[in-house]
Length: 78
Image (tube, rainbow, N blue to C red; front, side, top):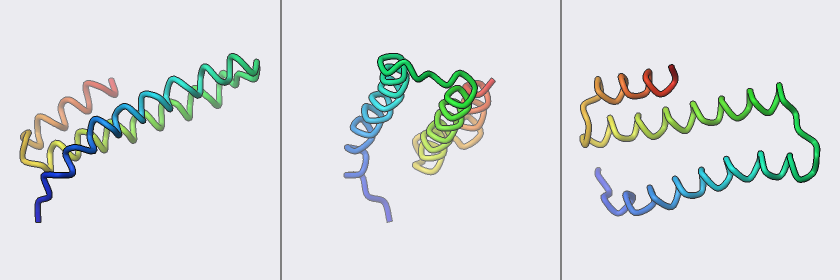
C-alpha cells in the first residue's frame, strides 16, 4: 500500500544527511584528528548508500522510470 504522507519525510531526511555529512569533516578538522584514508572511504560508502536509497525510492515510487533512476545513479557514482 502506498503511503503518500511519507513524502513529507524526504526533505527532513535529506537535510539530516547533509548535516551529518558536513558535520563529520568539520568535527575532524576542529579536533585535528583527520583520517585521510579511512574518512574518505567511509564518506564515499555512506554517500553511495544514500544515493542508492534515494534513486531506489524514486524508482519504486512510480515517480520515475527505474531505468532512468539507474542511469542517474550510475552517473552520480561515476
